Image 1 (cartoon, rainbow, N blue to C red):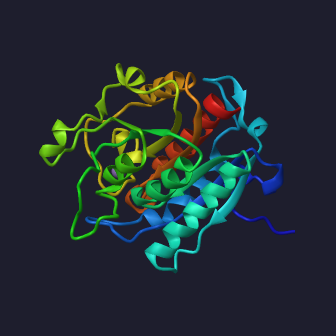
Image 2: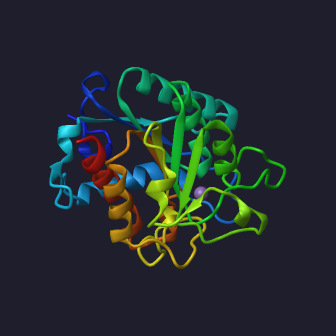
Length: 269
Ligand SMILES: [Mn+2]
């Protein structure tokens, strides 16, 4: 009997699942240091060390019926990977399930929200240390540094929390919110896609990212974001930019696994 590496060791099949994990180990437009291609499997591995039960939200995430589809083939062109991801996220949503995309670089948010937008007006809450709002970067329109600019062009409302790294003009953009005021900037009438760039967290908590930035969210801050999101209709999420090679302690991957557990517990269990 062999056991495939999966999130929380799940062996549920797709038809049985309500929450569906899809790995997209995309690492093509990295500007400083890479390592995000190892993200999805590092999260699956680290999930072995955490409990199914969220004591914060008093839920057992096995009740959410999680399936893990594995990873998309990273040995294709970036266009093929992104269009395959879009088709998969669309299929998961059409089947009435919750997609969770594991990056990979933040670029993977773009096809995910493009798929989700096909089902109606949409808003995105992004947790990110960086604004990711460049019009283009190093000649590329679709990359990690433009991910939230492209997202803003697809959805009806974008709100960014945790940003503390700006290139200048982006500071004037209307998308930024604080931990205190972000719920008022979200619209109760719109479905919501949650995009979590791990560098939103403080690097003392989660150093294994490609572009760490001091002064980030604490773990309790993150749980408070989830608590506030329980009032909204959250239809899916991505969790991106884990680069386990930069964290020999492994705590960043555990942190990522725990983010999934708490999010599933708070929103989908
Ligand atoms: Mn980002």
